[in-house]
Image 1 (cartoon, rainbow, N blue to C red):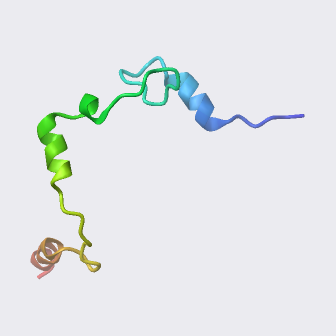
Image 2: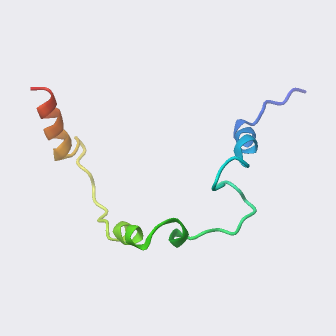
Image 3: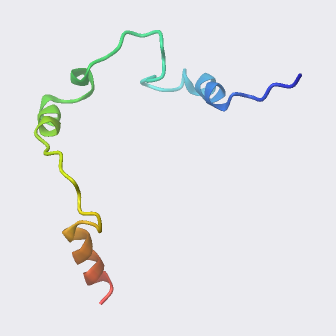
Length: 70
C-alpha cells in the first residue's frame, strides 16, 4: 500500500529547526498576548471599535480610485 506524504507534517519537519519562533510546536508552554506584543499595541487593539466596514470599499479607496483614473 502506498501512502501519500502528509505535506503539512513534512513542511514542519523540514523547517522546525530553522525558525527563530516555532509557533507550531506542541511541547512548549503556551505564551500570552503580553509575550507577543508591546503594551501600547495591546491597548490599541483593545480600544479598536468593532464596526462594519463599507461594503463597496472605504471612502479613502473611492478617492484613490477616482484620482488614479481621471
